[in-house]
Amino acid sequence: MTPRRPPAPRTRVTRDDWLRVARDALVNEGVDQVKVAVLAQRLQVARSSFYWYFTDRDHLAAALLDQWEAHNTSAIQERASRPATTITEATLHVFECWADPRLFDVPLEFAVRDWARRDEAVRARLAAADEGRIDALAAMHRRFGFGRKEALVRARVQYHSQIGLYALGVQETHAERLRLLPLYLRVFAGAEASREELREFERFVRSIPG
View 1 (cartoon, rainbow, N blue to C red):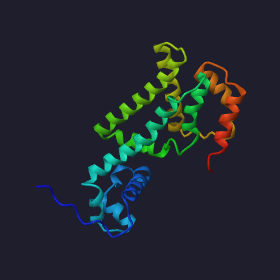
View 2: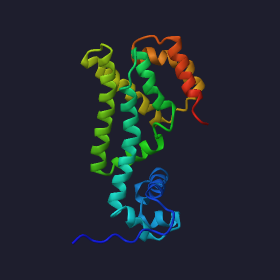
View 3: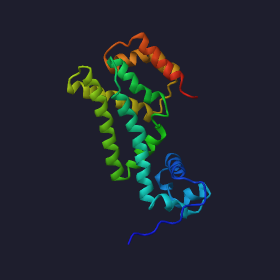
View 4: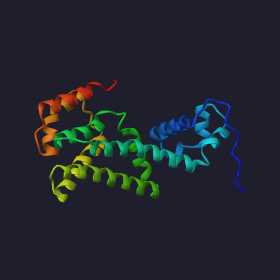
């Protein structure tokens, strides 16, 4: 017999609210603080409202990982597969992920990476995400004539260097990034970007709120 769900909560707390406070707890305090009682207290609601949206803590943890993957992995894959006329234009599409925190959530990324160090299932999921992101970047390079092996190496260099910058806590302003942008493109794409491509990316960067 299927157990009945509890009645719908009479508060305005939604599933997204639970995920939001769970994400904040994961990022700021680690996965050990992603607990129903802790989150309910922060939302100022009864614990019972949690069970309208999730069956248990594992269900919430899985939803957090789904949210992370849908946000961070999908953004890279989508940008890497966008139509482009040159490899530099295609690479700039991916650079949008690194420039705009709405596309790639760095604190969440490293909270998941820390979580993966002590959870085998999360570690496997992270490895699959890394592989999927690199595969998308390699496919992007292959579209512009690079051989399979060179495309893979270029993808790994591009991806690992960016994740490494985040891991090291390197602080690079948008102004500095734009100043060095032609050199980054020459290294990662193996070609010179046009002035219009550079201007278009600068327009994108300057449109980012904050």
